[in-house]
Length: 470
Image (cartoon, rainbow, N blue to C red; front, side, top):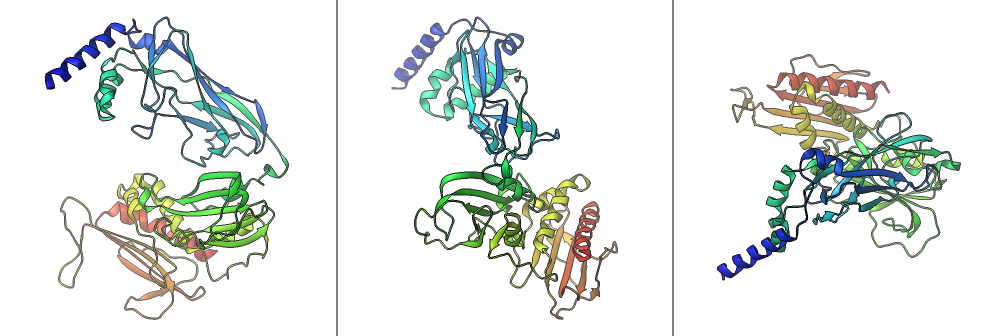
């Protein structure tokens, strides 16, 4: 049986080799064999109108070539190519979804030959749903390009019959002979003003203005025919996913909320799901916010305490009018998000700051208003011995930030403060009593990583002081 299988495989391989036409060889030839261009359906659109673009790629040589769309992918087998958009100010446009993706011209796994003189097209429908493009002005849209190689990898034709695993070796070998496909020239699309910023009232733009640091819009469904908010009647409307990711490469520590705005009449009875909160109706429609419970949400309000109020104000909810939080109740969750955003931004000062962002616990214990907890490689100190490392090669860490209503309990000496705090450069644990706000703030930075302790303490002091001064 093995002899027959081997003979059959070799026969197919020989046949495929015989049928393979002459190909373009050499990186210089490969790089010039294909020509690509980016095309916009319209040169100008009003705010909120769809922006359709497409990529056209043509084999300008007299020999066939292969094309691969996975060299710029974020997923091993995704078969995606990526776009980039710059706004009127020249800065990258805010992504409101994962980076824009379109399927490889030749399918997800298959990479057949592009014949001489032939052209393929891939559409990227409604690119404005992936990037925020409501600010009036001119936008520059670019495609990154990808890789090409000669179509003489006949082994792919044989091995593909045995499933995805059979592709891995040939794909790796093929990439060794690949050359970059020069990306097409950028194109320009102008966005011109429309009443209200667009038919949805510029929902995404309103939300972007109020997001705490580290939060983003990670998916937007705008004016869909049927949207069903948890606890509310379905109807025409919009839905946004709001996500806080302290470290962009570590999704498990992310927190999520869903925002729904229903603009049309009810299309059915409310669902039994009651996890959504009705914020009221206003200029943009009926507004609902879903923030839990459930592990998939990961306690988002601990990172943005005033989310419901901020969103209701931004969307001009009037029935009922949002009630402002008392001045003595600052948004400690927003402060925690800002601390982590600065930790990530200043990670060059202490390498462990980025990892701290990825794994820190942000779920408050009962009675806490905000918390940050992290411990690693620590042999806890005792009366007889100081803190030490479990692994001698790695620093130890115990980090804690707790904000809770004043209780008068505990053995830690609390320093009365009203407007600012500042680390003395030595204390591992320090406490502050803020009578005006009725809270105690306890901070622990216990570590033998001096740059980490210095940088994190300065960041925490800066943001706590900002809240106290406000």
